[in-house]
Amino acid sequence: MPTSLIPVEMHCHTVFSPDAWRTPEELVEIAAQRGVHTLSITDHNHLGAQQRAAARAAQLGLRYVPGIEIDAVTPNGQNCHFVCFNCDMEDTTFQAVANHRSAQYPLQFEEIQPHLKAHGCDLDMDEMTERLSERYPTNPEATVNIWFARELLIEKRQIPDNAAYAQITRAIHQELRASGAAKTWPPTSFETMRDAVHDAGGKVLLAHVARYHRGDMDAQLSLIRELLANGMDGFELYHPDNVGEADFDRLKGLARNTDCLLSCGSDCHDVQDENRNRHFANMKVEDWFLERMV
Image 1 (tube, rainbow, N blue to C red):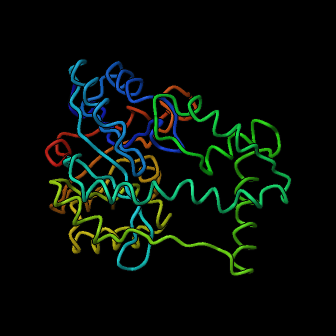
Image 2 (spheres, rainbow, N blue to C red; image 1 turned 45 degrees about the vertical axis):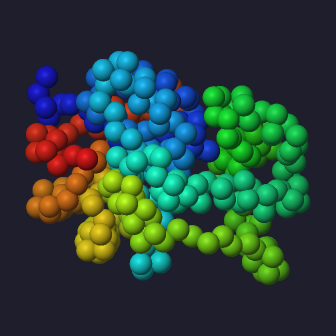
């Protein structure tokens, strides 16, 4: 098989992400079946899948790179996602950074939950808690969160779709801000995240570049350059959002002409759902990319 057709999957999620499905083992097995060259699971601010994924990948002879996706605020105040690879998962400082954001998931839901009923949404908290093990099988640390709430409200036909839920949560947040009751949680700065990842032996790459400035390649390239100058190690070149940009060739040109690390991934959140996994293992790389890959 020519190297230009080799699929690389370094951005995907399991039940250790609050908005994703399927176990680490299921994801690894499907990646192996599809001939993935290199796999990394990058759950949102959570390391729970890593040991299990690495063990199953070793059994199947699949190259596995430890990974995680961490939210952090850049020096210019922009909230971005970073895929981080090859960190020492036992490093306590790195663990603390990873846990800081995930600990906020249940708090975010607890803030809006008392106000949902006024907007026609009535959730049974006992039912939510009881169904956590069903929704997030094999994740012993699963907690209630805004994504699970949305799924249950749609299931119970209290709202028609994701857009309706987004409209309701926006209205609740506006009400909380107007009354002065809105809560804030301290963000993780890029510098804190970068230093923790580097001290743990890992690398930091900006995820889904196009998502921050859709349709504005000048802004995308500027963001990458600013973060590289501030100690970032590289960026995710091949991602469905990036490839869909009209000026993707300019992003690719920056990758080829800048000495930094690169990654490639689908951002798949449900490897067994045809609608959610259509890009999984379909992001393929050229010869030169393999030499620059994390």
